[in-house]
Image (tube, rainbow, N blue to C red):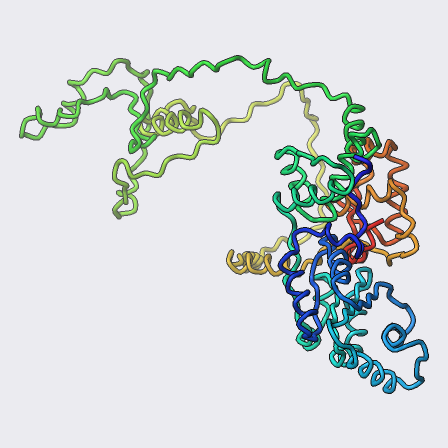
Length: 533
């Protein structure tokens, strides 16, 4: 290998044989040139998809090619029109624009043979500005006997109006490379620098496609760095490996320290309660009855008192004097509603022994133990004199001014009870809360105007931060960035602040942490092609 065959620069017209993966599109465009079919077209493709390389290779197939790749800043529509006249008709530009257009149309009508190729490729210009320029140039371009191609990104095309897009034939977006096309790219490039082919392993090729997404420009750079790393040059691969070695990561031996197999859990010999039996049915002094015990009873009615005498409990409670409360039915004269056994709602336990405590309280109430253990009080408690206090033996002297004692005829009116606080309907309260949440203003990230001079002079460290901010939110406390750039948090914070002041990064606060991300202006600027450097 005499040199590294993978270069990130676009393909030149003399290197048209290096173009791969665009055979069908190139065949259609070549047919338009040879068949003499004038038209205006839009070559659509993302940044790095190979639009410039395709136009350069197509110019080699045309006998007359007029590429325009430098965008004028002052009066771009008129300037581009004058440059087109200079390259097609001559340098003696008429002072009248209409005369200029007519002479240029007449000059192209006199050409014979293949159609001339006129191409416009301005990746670094916004779509809004290009739309204003081509709205003025399109009527002129439609009269020219030539194949006019304008290379645009999807972001630039989205800024064009529907009426302007209808005047162009838009191609399908340029697709990314797959494994087969990537292998053809390697073979075509290796033929220029070596007599032997590069039998790259299938796994390495698939990994390269996965890391770059198959984008041609990114794939070529990846392969270039891969060869440079094998040659010992400092690339992104070597920097990543050096960063990992500097971290001194110890292997994780947690798996080795675990037992080879976990012992199975033995089930506890505890009979589970039937699912339909409530917790409240817990008998203290009545033994369990057999399911078929009802069949042994005689047909005659048995008095409950005799049944209780015949049954002997396992243990007896102390003989407390239990005061029986009068039945509520007798007092109120009404019937008491009772639940059927087994239909009571289960008691809610607040802790591990909540169910047992609830059953204990229920059983105590049923047998009257709760009132029995409570001390009884009979009448008011008599006050006992305090022997330590000494009262004076003298009688108190009462002063009187012979005031008349009187009693009011009526009692004062009682103060009105406070009105109960109205309770809002929960459905209405929920709707009000949802409306308040919708009306809550969202915290927007602060972004300053984009400084284009600052963008064009980014350092390597700043470019690394911008690349990281495109993928995710970053902060000066990011350990990976600190290790990658070999700087501390104060220095990294200074770099972040500088990029924020330049409008490249936007910042939002989350608590006491500042999170930075690429600003919308910078993202649009880089998407249009200023990230190539």
